[in-house]
Length: 198
Image 1 (tube, one colour):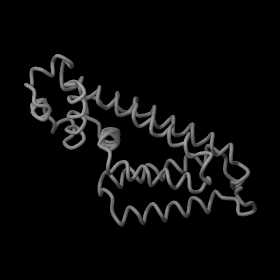
Image 2 (tube, helix red, strand yellow):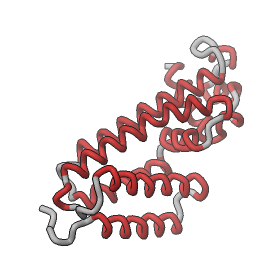
Image 3 (cartoon, helix red, strand yellow):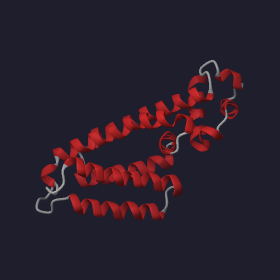
């Protein structure tokens, strides 16, 4: 039980305060244990941080795979892609795991930068694979001028912009406007108006 509490407390502290701002003492206090007890499970703050990051990475990949598995056959392509953006915005605001993962991916501790960037690409690669597969599958609905990988790259750029705006400003009216505007330009660019989606 203490291990699970420790994992949750570490995630909250790292999400709120980053690597430098979170201390083993604050994590231990939140759980109600002595700082020394953490060493039963982890050798150092760095090891606990890396564990927290890898766990959050797994959770984010599971969310993404589940999202596309559940919604791909139920929603129109347009709504599926837009919903993914808005779901991630809401997830960042409400889920400490997501906010921790995104913050750490964009602002890793200097001494862990290479490791974090390398591991983060697992998520990027998975999203890229799912989107490119989706665009290939739905190619009859799309503007033939753009390949599946080009369309994927454009969509991922919108997603990256969403993450950066959330990191600096959080959920705001400006963020909503930016999502809506960039989404409309993207969709009108890729959608083939000659055919109606079935």
